[in-house]
Each structure stands twice: as C-alpha cells, then as structure tokens.
Image: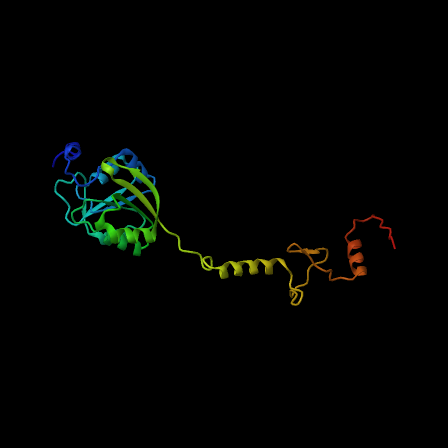
Length: 232
C-alpha cells in the first residue's frame, strides 16, 4: 500500500482526478457537526484526514473497498446510511459506484438530520438527488474547494407546526388566549375565588362575600391589640 502522503500528492497533481480533495476549512466545518458517516468512500482520503485530525469519529463505506485505500473502508452500499442517522452523512462526488439519491433517500427515511455534500449540485446527473435534498433539507454552510467544487452542509427541515400554516390555526390560538384571560360569567368556576383575591387572570372579579362578612374576616386577621375605628 502506498503511503497516504504519496497518494494525496499524486492526486493533487493529477488533473484527471475526479474526487475533490479536502481542505482544512472543509474538514473543520465537518467537525463542527459531529461524527461522520461517508458512503461511497472510494480511496478514503476524506475519512483518513478526519481520523488523522482526531476530533470526530468517522466511519467509511464503499460497495467494493479499494485495496489502495488510505484508511480502513468497510464494505457497504448506500443503505448503510440508514444505520447512522446520528451522524452527518457525507457524500463526495466522483464515486464510481455511488448513488447519491439512494443514499440520501435511505438516510432521510430512517430519520437522518444532517448531511454534507461535496461537488457541484448543478450537475445534470444529480437532478433526482437535488430534488430530494431541496425538499427535505435546508442549506446551513457552504465552503469553497479548489477546482470550483463546494462542500455544503444541510440540516433536515422542521415539520410545520399543526395549524400554523393557515389562518384557522392562528385564529384558534387567539381564541384560546382570550378564553384564558377573560372570566366566563355565564359559567363561573366550580370553586369560588378565595376572599381578598379580587384579581384573577388580569381581570377584576366580583367579591363573593357580603360587606359585613368581608369586614369581619378582615378584623379577624388584624394583630392583637390593633384598634380599628369604624368610619360608618
């Protein structure tokens, strides 16, 4: 097996190399989003550099791992993405046997929330992949790479809250707030308000005791020796 540096140097000088090389900025951006699962890892350069930096765990899969891979690559197809929904799914363009749409579809159906793509999203052969990507995810970060490629990080869209997409939902919430604030005089609460608590929910509530009963209750709460002179 050739040394890692030799492989990277060869690829950097080879104009025909089909897979983008990672930069420090790209690797640091991936690391900010936690552990990584790369599908279609091919020669394993992205995974190797993440492992060498040692800040996040990275697992790599390829349908047919190459003997000259620069890091350990496990055998596995696009469906392996469904088993790592707690990680960022990494897809790097140029994999000879990588079906981006199939990998993203498996990841999405299993509940995956973060994915990273390396390449040109405007490529005509990625139409089905980008349709699924744009429908289910929102772009968070873009990192420029040599050669015009981009690393983009995508986060799963949050489902719309029930009722929030229509005027009816907003109306329901407003009515609910009004009901909470305004006492319903036609149907008073079963338990009457306690004495000397005339304010409930920001609205004034009529006393439930007679004037004499309220005065008597008030005087009973006065400290011993307190002289109260009636104003009547």
